[in-house]
Image (cartoon, rainbow, N blue to C red; front, side, top):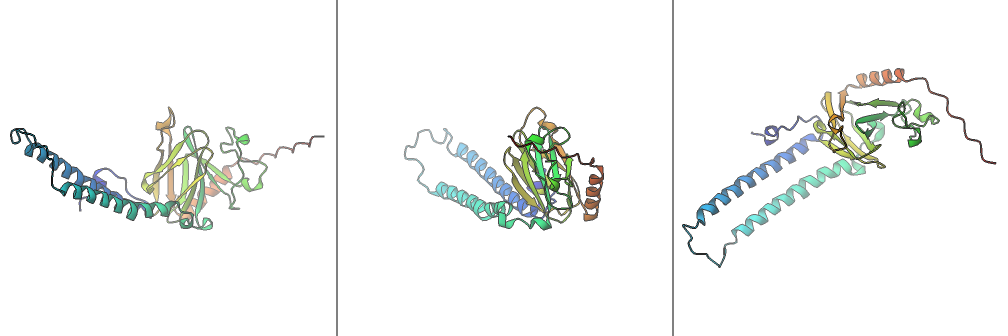
Length: 264
């Protein structure tokens, strides 16, 4: 069967829920194609039917048939079915907290946008993210990890490269350091705005191993065109090896700054 999605250049799906998204898009595209052909055909018919040569005198009584009203009601009904019957339930499965996988069984990542890159933060072997604060932000600490927090000493921070485990759910908390960005994973059929001061979760399960592009889908400044990262979907063994390699590359932890003396 001819696929409008493929004809329009939709990228191959690589997520578990992506098939449902593609089916909805395909239905919408076929519906819009039928509407386009139907309205153009009707437009050409009216030009022919009501040409001045066939209607030299205006008819002030107007159209008496109810056919157009029935057609318009049918269009509204089909749109309501697509939205309420397919679109909203599909959306709810992506955003309702009860639909999220158990975080203990998922790969957990913090994705933080900045002009013009993505920073990815993974918890270490302890499974806990370290505290972050803007007062610790600098060139060597792009996420502002608190050096005094023991939970953050084994954390992994990667720039412009995110690793996930194939066929294992991923929960990604998305935020921004500066302006509004948008975290777009076209192959995973996911896109979420990154808003300063907010942490917005998304989740999906990749089902095809490989390398995929992550782009910013929100105009965020002069370097927006270059805000591109890579997502690698790999086996559990490859993911563990990468995490071990990243841990070995971390510099020795700096001594925590002394606590301030209380004021007299």
